[in-house]
Image (cartoon, rainbow, N blue to C red; front, side, top):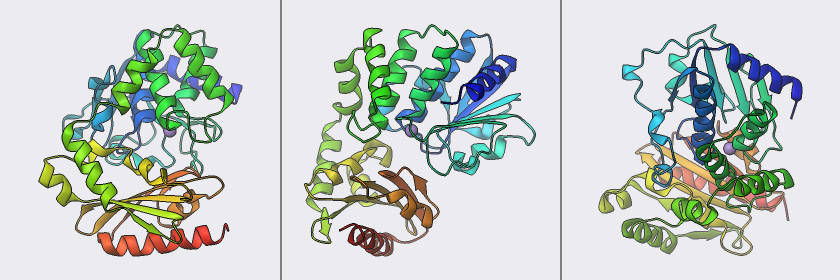
Length: 326
Ligand SMILES: [Mn+2]
């Protein structure tokens, strides 16, 4: 990571008094936990700060320590920040409603690890090799001699754990593992944290996942696995999409699958697609070609199409992509 930029970030944080912290809409484990650690650092330095995110906190992260500090309702927002910290976000517009409350002219610190970051900040630290923004935050604050609390250590660990798919994706670098090791040495309870995030579903979740797997579709000689999570399935079980963050990962459980897809009909003519891939199949370019974004092996798209149309289109494009690889 660039040490000059790291120093500029620390200076910007130090010179601030009131800070708005935000991230991409529908925050994930990395964005949630990274924001909480930045908040804790700023509070420890006597700053006033708020965290605002567009969208619900996925159920699996609602037990993260400090998550109650994240607000999503901007209707009451009357904070006047002199600095905005944007984490995990390639385009400022990806913060959703939050970008409408960021007044022009306020300095922005942009810290991200995604390809295609637009360098919209006054200070920009983008490390595409980092496993997670959590890892980057750890390095920045460690370089400042910061004494991480037990909560901060746990939250950095969760950021790395979730963004590497439990130390499974190719983003599981020696650096990510070294930092995770230091956090465990510092007292992070690996079993409790992992159980809390990954092994705490209720019976309804288990049964919905069962139904989604039952209807899984395999295409292109089993190289593409498409899962579908519908509003109907959720209404029938009184659940929400936020209860199923991460189920796209099941699409790669089948041997030989190169691209895994999850389709969600979030409205009649809006379909969200999560894409996962193995090896050198890069789904981020496919996502970007439809206005989405992400990493080579994990990306997302929101399409203004009905579910079946979205499926036809993306399965075909994913098919072209895997055909190009064999
Ligand atoms: Mn991330």
